Amino acid sequence: MKSLTPAVRDQIIKAQRAEITEYHIYKRLAKRTKKAANKEVLERIAEDELRHYNIWKSYSQREVAPSSWNIKKYFWIAHIFGLTFGLKIMERGEERAQINYKEIGKEIPEALKISQDENNHEKELIAMIDEDQLKYIGSIVLGLNDALVEILGTLAGLTFALQNNKLVALAGIITGIAGALSMSSSEYLSNKSEGKEDGAVKSAIFTGIAYVFAVIFLVAPYFIFKSPFMSLAVAVFDSIFIVFLFTFYISVANEQPFRKRFVEMVTLSTVVGLISFGLGYLARIVFGIEV
Image 1 (cartoon, rainbow, N blue to C red):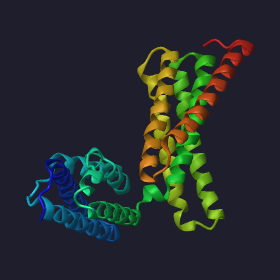
Image 2 (image 1 turned 60 degrees about the vertical axis):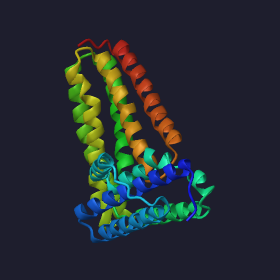
Image 3 (image 1 turned 180 degrees about the vertical axis):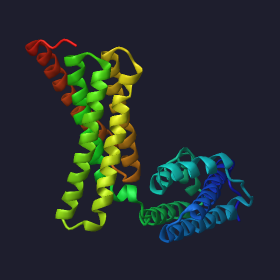
């Protein structure tokens, strides 16, 4: 075997560490996974990672220890946010980004093909993972988007019209609960009418949970701050934060563009909020509301 330059050897060792670390992550996730199909997929990817590790080891001629921190980190990310999200965030992580396969390919021509085969195979296997939160992502988007637009608009209008935190919060909660029940029932009936009876109940549940989650975040500032306008400002920030988190999740899990979807949702929520804010101010003047 020909001698490798220090730079290439260093890159191979990084690749080894990434592969053996991911092997242990997949094995741990497989042990904790209840669905037999998902367990099988994770076991297959784990074995692939170990095989890749051994390929690179044949060139470096040394054992490399896994990163215990990354094993814990990505295991819990996948455990909390779902397998697909956790695995895809891991595959595009900093450890992978540091590996320069072109540099390795200068001295080991087959390295580029090995890397490409690895990536394609892993993507195919990850796509086979069956998760409810990805199946019903449309229902979650519906619940979140409707809550952000409707509740933020309601809070903005009432803030100027009433200028009383307790009343605004109470109205927001009542509107939120009614909205969640309305959206859930509508989603259920919509799925039933389309012949999707098996998933109708779950779709309704995911829609309702997403709606309530958004309502809690938006109304919470009115219980924390004394100033209604400060509460509204924080609620607006919360809405942008929710959109950011969820858009990032979708962009990773479904491999969709982040910026376009994020700008669309923020723009829609902001425009509706401003219109409602103006209507609340107008209503206060026209009807002479004083609380």
